[in-house]
Image (cartoon, one colour):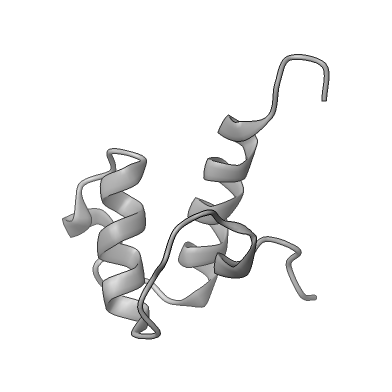
Length: 60
């Protein structure tokens, strides 16, 4: 099943490298990189979802 959360939905310029994406995204949401350093695409999509959720206003 494909997720609708991806880096293309974010207002950030992110590198193509998955590990660097995790490093930058974890910094944005204040998650220690050590917790996601071995993560993959699922972790990137989960963090993207959290960031997109934070951009919603109260009524969305």
